[in-house]
Length: 191
Image (cartoon, rainbow, N blue to C red; front, side, top):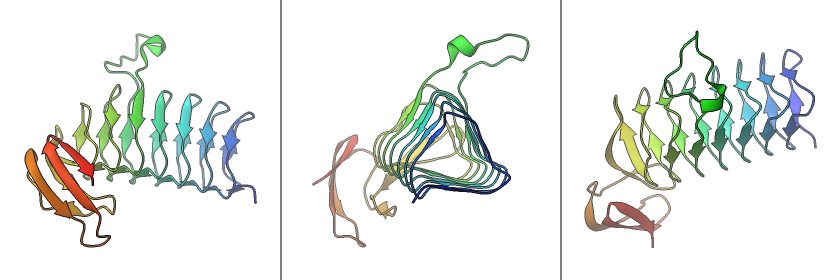
């Protein structure tokens, strides 16, 4: 089955869209975009030319994914969250040659109204809280909240907070899946 698109969606020639993806009202997808299978693009989403969206991503309403943003498989973008692609934009100065790459790894959740400053990498399964402003790299499985975002804990692949300190050596088990996690200093590993 090919993708489904609402009649108000604008899909520029050349855009690649995987099977079973759903494109809702007033979405605009630029011609250079690459979108995987089973992706959902909510109302009023914009997808730039130099963008890759992996399989099974869910992009909620009012999200703009600008050039140089790369989403791995299973990323959740909450309503009205924001990506940037220039660190110090000015209306009177063109800085398209200064776009910075932003990488969001597998399984990450980006909460509603969060802002992701360009040029960073967010590690797999990290959880960015609603309204957080992320301006530096985020470790895998990290729970980040606040402005600027601070690392306050760890989450499982299931998306539940683990009973672990932010650093040190400790172990925890996800109560939903039984998966075991081990904290080694500042890195969380699945055992």
